Picture (cartoon, chains in turn yellow, orange):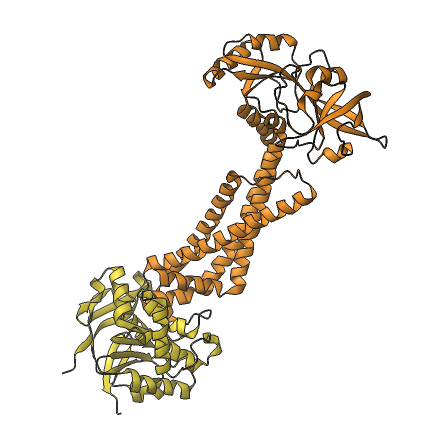
Length: 231
Length: 378
């Protein structure tokens, strides 16, 4: 029986008050497990990104709980939660959010630097991760000198450099062409996913569904169905 | 924290255009602030040059006197009365007035003549050529070698001048701590000769220089002089009185204040705006850092470090530029009235600290407001 990575119970999230109140999550329950790559899919405005934010400790739900590796993250203080994210969760953003004035290696080393690790050691580890994601020899370049796919690989290296148990990917192929997006997710599936890691991906892109272990469908703030990937 | 500060440093200095703009803004503001205040301090210092150069502990004067260069003559009995006061060790007269020297080309040059007490020569300058006793020689005058000295055609010992239609002979060359404000050469002679050479109203004593027996006697000397209808001021009080006149009654102080505030506003607007733009451009990335797990205090530390580093680098450059310009000006005008004091440096430092504080406050507010969720939402 695989170990539970994330467990969400009775999640409710709404924005605004009174007539302007909009429910983004309605009684969402889910469990993800180590060793799986879970996709959350659904139309725009269905609550995918809100769910991802709540699960990763970025957006506080109005009701319900989120246990990550058994820790009720929304019972942690602000600093403890920030520390928890830094230690346990890696993030890959839709627009990469790399610092253009830093080198590729410095960008990838940021989580280690934030964890107060020695600068030079952090850079060395980041370079080794850049090699893993196929960016050998690009460590000293600024991100603007890289292609979109390469920038996304830097973002993945940044997310993975602190060896998080959980990897959160928000629309990872949205800023990439089809082939590159496919290659990136294939890479993540083959090289990053392992028995001790859980990857949660929010996406619109059905061309990358083949890499999912499980696909959760969302609509109007609710999880409406689950399907196992055919691959 | 060291690695985070290095990260902040790289984010700042690697954005060369903005970092340069920030530095230029602060450097220029500091330079203006330092230069204006140092010029003003220099002017005040030069305005008090006679007080500094004579060096007497206390000065007795007419109550109407506002600056040392505008004395009001006092009758001789004031000197006698002061000499007889309790707590006075000694008291001597001092004459200070203006005269005209005819130059070899027929033109006239204004000079300041200082007449020292004939007996004691209290307040005499330090001679670099000649001996002080020669001041008693017939028509003897001592010329001060300062920036104005060439205006007397660089006289030497034995040079003769025509001073207010009288013959004057240079018997010594002296140096003093501070040159005067008005760009006139200074000649020292005895009190009696000074009042003989220069047409005067009925009362000829410009000041009575007083040495109290001890510092405790200053208060009672002041009281006794006050009772006589005159004022006794310590050296420091007289310098302050002179400074107050320039600060509050000539408009100079207000001009300096306005210029300093304008410089501050220029520095604040340039650096504040540029720093804010820098923060705005990196806002989403700061949001990403928050999402990754950066604590608010680390982000505040980064921004404070960036603002402080820029501000104090600019401060150093601004002070350096000011020193360089004063040095260059003094190559051409040795008595150039600009002085960098600890006071100037503290004012500049305080203003830069305020600029850094406001710039970082605005940046911090913006960064703390961004929600990592906004980064996910794009």
